[in-house]
Length: 298
Image (cartoon, rainbow, N blue to C red; front, top):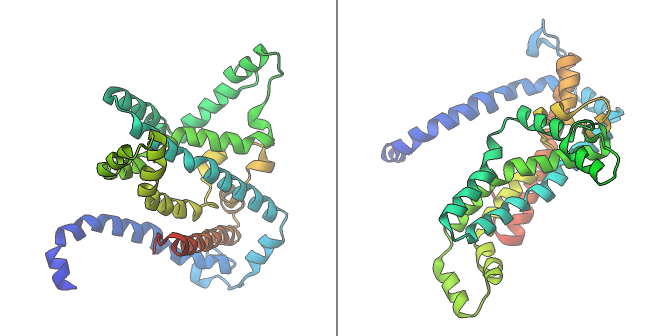
């Protein structure tokens, strides 16, 4: 081991900041997970608080919010996976087929740009465009003889607005890794396909897709393993009392019960539950991918 470290010390030096980050911000905080099994009292600290076992998990399972949180979080996560995962792949395949360098760079710049908008700005754009009184979308609806829709207060619209605005914002950035994978496709495969009379679509289907399939599978596993980790900030900014029925997810519930309600142990149990489910999904999908195609994370 010491010999390997001496030989490749530059590589390990580059790796060190990342390792320190994960240890400090991801592994060390795991010490506090034990409050999910205790009645945490701040004056007694984590070790001095009484142990209550699965009390908080049982309370959460028996609560009114349990199935609503499961339905909303899983619904948004699956919706996001089904819609948001294929779009960057399609975008990368289309950009890869563009031959004009200037036009290709323009398309890439236009599709990458939304990624750099902050979540607050993104939600602000939604509010402005979808306003029932002054929003552009409702002006168009009125122009065609329809009635204005209050998109941001209708529970039925929340998931679609969340997912499709996220797809628009992230599809360009997410396509970069697929473009990198496509750049590694052997040109001789395309030349052989052209000789055999394959059309452009046939070459995309039979050459490009199989070559980037390992990348697709790995990213699918990672995305599936975070289905219940629906981001807090955007949901919280889009959330209001009118759409709470369909917008309440694990992250916002933990915020309300933990930070606002000071139920630290209970909120820790809720957060731990969602992470355990994510871990089970990750391991399950990885196992299926390994058995089906010999491509997996481990």
